[in-house]
Image (cartoon, rainbow, N blue to C red):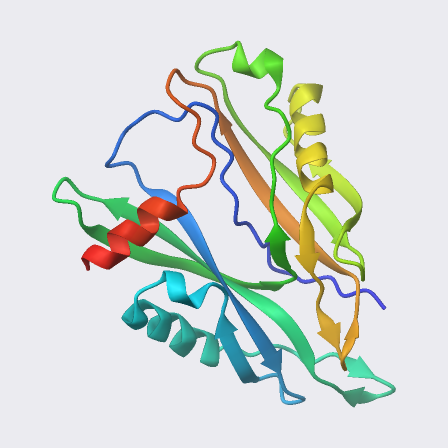
Length: 217
């Protein structure tokens, strides 16, 4: 059985030498493990790495997840449970005073990334200051939590090195597969990667800034 989710699960921003603009908005995602009952509603849910976030923020995430509903999978003509990850995506906008705002951008259902890594940044892009682009990697997550296949979607003219970079990165990821009626199934994970070559220190994940901002609220 293979389940293809209709929502893109984008969670990583790949930035090579990002400009140090403290006021620039940036995306962050938070994952929740959810058991959906046969009615498609959450029966159990826990926020991944819950202890890293303020209690009020966790309560807000849980309240939103509790309202989610899916079309339950069907096995032998009957609806069954599904255990899956639910990703909530935010845009964080810092301000000069050290606070800022957090905007909810969307919610997705899919396998939870457990181990995320990036391949070596393309040398030709790294040498080209001011280069910007994005690429979509589509991973078919197998029952073992690894990508069985990785398809890369990019605009015409995208350097092959960027396509190889996206594929090599996802090939190293490990996921917690979705469970349908208690059994692992194949599913799809979509990763939209933004690349931007500038002249400062590389910063791939900005979750730390997000957590500091939340603690000030």
